[in-house]
Length: 170
Image (tube, rainbow, N blue to C red; front, side, top):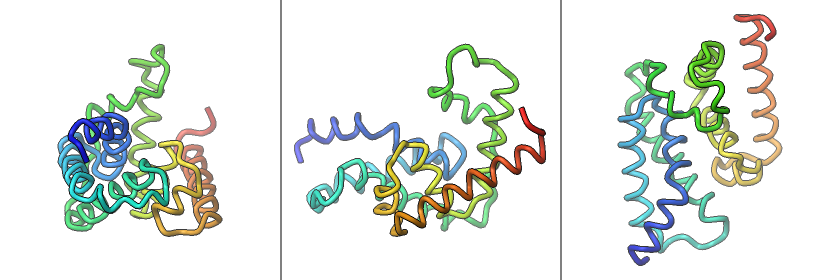
Protein backbone atom coordinates (compact mmCIF):
# COMPACT_ATOMS: atom_id res chain seq x y z
CA UNK A 1 0.00 0.00 0.00
CA UNK A 2 1.26 3.42 -0.87
CA UNK A 3 1.85 5.88 1.93
CA UNK A 4 -0.75 8.34 0.61
CA UNK A 5 -3.34 5.55 0.40
CA UNK A 6 -2.59 4.62 4.00
CA UNK A 7 -2.96 8.25 5.06
CA UNK A 8 -6.40 8.32 3.45
CA UNK A 9 -7.40 5.11 5.28
CA UNK A 10 -6.21 6.67 8.55
CA UNK A 11 -8.08 9.94 7.92
CA UNK A 12 -11.30 8.08 7.15
CA UNK A 13 -11.11 5.64 10.05
CA UNK A 14 -9.09 7.07 12.93
CA UNK A 15 -12.10 8.70 14.60
CA UNK A 16 -13.84 5.33 14.77
CA UNK A 17 -10.66 3.60 15.94
CA UNK A 18 -10.13 6.15 18.69
CA UNK A 19 -13.73 6.00 19.93
CA UNK A 20 -13.63 2.20 20.06
CA UNK A 21 -10.39 2.37 22.04
CA UNK A 22 -11.76 5.04 24.35
CA UNK A 23 -14.82 2.92 25.15
CA UNK A 24 -12.49 0.16 26.28
CA UNK A 25 -9.97 2.16 28.28
CA UNK A 26 -11.78 5.31 29.39
CA UNK A 27 -8.85 7.67 28.99
CA UNK A 28 -7.10 9.43 26.16
CA UNK A 29 -3.59 8.15 26.77
CA UNK A 30 -4.49 4.46 26.64
CA UNK A 31 -6.89 5.05 23.74
CA UNK A 32 -4.15 6.80 21.78
CA UNK A 33 -1.64 4.03 22.60
CA UNK A 34 -4.06 1.34 21.45
CA UNK A 35 -4.89 3.44 18.38
CA UNK A 36 -1.22 3.51 17.42
CA UNK A 37 -1.00 -0.27 17.85
CA UNK A 38 -4.04 -0.64 15.60
CA UNK A 39 -2.56 1.59 12.90
CA UNK A 40 0.61 -0.47 12.95
CA UNK A 41 -1.41 -3.70 12.60
CA UNK A 42 -3.35 -2.18 9.70
CA UNK A 43 -0.13 -1.09 7.98
CA UNK A 44 1.49 -4.51 8.45
CA UNK A 45 -1.58 -6.50 7.40
CA UNK A 46 -3.31 -4.41 4.74
CA UNK A 47 -2.09 -6.80 2.05
CA UNK A 48 -4.09 -9.54 3.81
CA UNK A 49 -7.37 -7.65 3.41
CA UNK A 50 -9.41 -9.83 1.06
CA UNK A 51 -12.28 -7.47 0.42
CA UNK A 52 -14.88 -9.88 1.82
CA UNK A 53 -16.23 -7.03 3.95
CA UNK A 54 -15.97 -3.28 3.89
CA UNK A 55 -12.52 -1.95 4.77
CA UNK A 56 -14.06 -0.11 7.73
CA UNK A 57 -15.45 -3.41 9.05
CA UNK A 58 -12.03 -5.05 8.71
CA UNK A 59 -10.41 -2.12 10.52
CA UNK A 60 -13.05 -2.26 13.26
CA UNK A 61 -12.30 -5.94 13.75
CA UNK A 62 -8.60 -5.16 14.15
CA UNK A 63 -9.47 -2.36 16.61
CA UNK A 64 -11.67 -4.63 18.69
CA UNK A 65 -9.11 -7.45 18.71
CA UNK A 66 -6.27 -5.14 19.75
CA UNK A 67 -8.42 -3.57 22.47
CA UNK A 68 -9.58 -6.93 23.77
CA UNK A 69 -6.02 -8.26 23.90
CA UNK A 70 -4.75 -5.12 25.58
CA UNK A 71 -7.74 -4.97 27.93
CA UNK A 72 -7.20 -8.57 28.99
CA UNK A 73 -3.56 -7.77 29.74
CA UNK A 74 -4.59 -4.80 31.90
CA UNK A 75 -7.72 -6.31 33.43
CA UNK A 76 -6.18 -6.59 36.88
CA UNK A 77 -6.08 -2.79 37.20
CA UNK A 78 -9.19 -0.68 37.55
CA UNK A 79 -10.16 1.95 35.04
CA UNK A 80 -11.22 5.22 36.60
CA UNK A 81 -13.40 7.45 34.45
CA UNK A 82 -12.79 11.16 34.72
CA UNK A 83 -15.32 13.55 33.16
CA UNK A 84 -12.57 15.64 31.56
CA UNK A 85 -11.35 12.55 29.72
CA UNK A 86 -14.50 12.14 27.64
CA UNK A 87 -15.67 15.71 27.08
CA UNK A 88 -14.25 15.53 23.56
CA UNK A 89 -16.82 12.83 22.78
CA UNK A 90 -19.47 15.53 22.69
CA UNK A 91 -19.07 15.78 18.92
CA UNK A 92 -22.45 14.09 18.59
CA UNK A 93 -24.23 16.30 21.10
CA UNK A 94 -25.68 19.63 19.88
CA UNK A 95 -23.64 22.74 20.76
CA UNK A 96 -26.30 24.16 23.07
CA UNK A 97 -25.64 21.29 25.47
CA UNK A 98 -22.05 22.38 26.17
CA UNK A 99 -21.71 22.98 29.90
CA UNK A 100 -25.17 21.49 30.52
CA UNK A 101 -24.90 19.66 33.86
CA UNK A 102 -27.68 17.25 32.91
CA UNK A 103 -25.89 16.25 29.70
CA UNK A 104 -22.66 15.87 31.67
CA UNK A 105 -24.46 13.59 34.12
CA UNK A 106 -25.85 11.49 31.28
CA UNK A 107 -22.44 11.16 29.66
CA UNK A 108 -20.85 10.13 32.95
CA UNK A 109 -23.62 7.60 33.64
CA UNK A 110 -23.28 6.12 30.16
CA UNK A 111 -19.49 5.92 30.30
CA UNK A 112 -19.60 4.20 33.69
CA UNK A 113 -22.31 1.85 32.42
CA UNK A 114 -20.16 0.85 29.44
CA UNK A 115 -17.20 0.02 31.65
CA UNK A 116 -19.29 -2.36 33.75
CA UNK A 117 -20.20 -4.44 30.70
CA UNK A 118 -18.41 -7.58 29.62
CA UNK A 119 -15.82 -7.09 26.91
CA UNK A 120 -18.16 -8.60 24.30
CA UNK A 121 -21.05 -6.32 25.26
CA UNK A 122 -18.69 -3.34 25.36
CA UNK A 123 -17.63 -4.22 21.83
CA UNK A 124 -21.26 -4.42 20.72
CA UNK A 125 -22.06 -1.00 22.20
CA UNK A 126 -18.95 0.57 20.75
CA UNK A 127 -19.68 -0.70 17.25
CA UNK A 128 -23.38 0.12 17.55
CA UNK A 129 -22.45 3.69 18.45
CA UNK A 130 -20.40 3.79 15.26
CA UNK A 131 -23.65 3.16 13.36
CA UNK A 132 -22.52 -0.23 12.14
CA UNK A 133 -25.20 -2.54 10.85
CA UNK A 134 -25.86 -5.62 12.97
CA UNK A 135 -24.56 -7.88 10.17
CA UNK A 136 -21.24 -5.99 10.17
CA UNK A 137 -21.07 -6.13 13.96
CA UNK A 138 -21.68 -9.88 13.71
CA UNK A 139 -18.82 -10.13 11.23
CA UNK A 140 -16.47 -8.27 13.57
CA UNK A 141 -17.46 -10.13 16.74
CA UNK A 142 -18.11 -13.61 15.39
CA UNK A 143 -21.63 -13.59 16.84
CA UNK A 144 -24.72 -14.24 14.75
CA UNK A 145 -26.71 -11.29 13.47
CA UNK A 146 -29.69 -12.35 15.61
CA UNK A 147 -27.48 -12.64 18.69
CA UNK A 148 -26.06 -9.15 18.06
CA UNK A 149 -29.53 -7.62 17.77
CA UNK A 150 -30.78 -9.48 20.85
CA UNK A 151 -27.82 -8.46 22.99
CA UNK A 152 -28.01 -4.83 21.90
CA UNK A 153 -31.72 -4.81 22.72
CA UNK A 154 -31.00 -6.24 26.18
CA UNK A 155 -28.22 -3.71 26.80
CA UNK A 156 -30.54 -0.85 25.85
CA UNK A 157 -33.18 -2.21 28.20
CA UNK A 158 -30.61 -2.61 30.97
CA UNK A 159 -29.28 0.94 30.62
CA UNK A 160 -32.82 2.32 30.64
CA UNK A 161 -33.67 0.35 33.79
CA UNK A 162 -30.48 1.42 35.56
CA UNK A 163 -31.03 5.05 34.61
CA UNK A 164 -34.62 5.00 35.87
CA UNK A 165 -33.54 3.25 39.06
CA UNK A 166 -30.90 5.89 39.73
CA UNK A 167 -32.52 9.03 38.34
CA UNK A 168 -36.17 8.31 37.66
CA UNK A 169 -37.55 9.19 34.25
CA UNK A 170 -36.38 12.40 32.67
